[in-house]
Length: 93
Image (tube, rainbow, N blue to C red; front, side, top):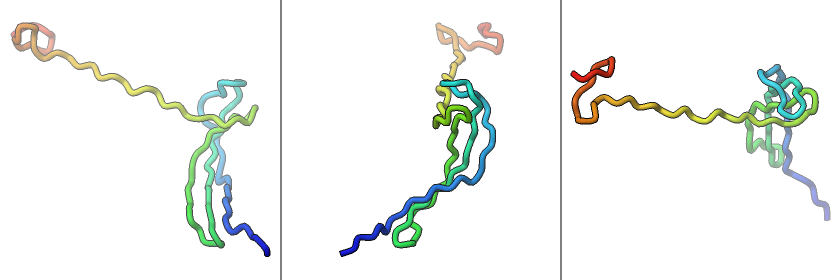
């Protein structure tokens, strides 16, 4: 009885380019790489995806991009404490 692997996963680097910032571990330059991932079953493609991954060029660590926290909205009062309307300068009308 012979068992053959029929599933396969391939990753291919499409391109590299320098990215802004520095590695938080060693201070090296950051590179952004576009990586294409394919999963096949019996030579039929099942899944295809392209992602951008960030790596350090000095220590080769995979870096994740942390998004800044969303800015808080500052709501300005449009009416005074006693319910009176305010103009653009904040004076009571």
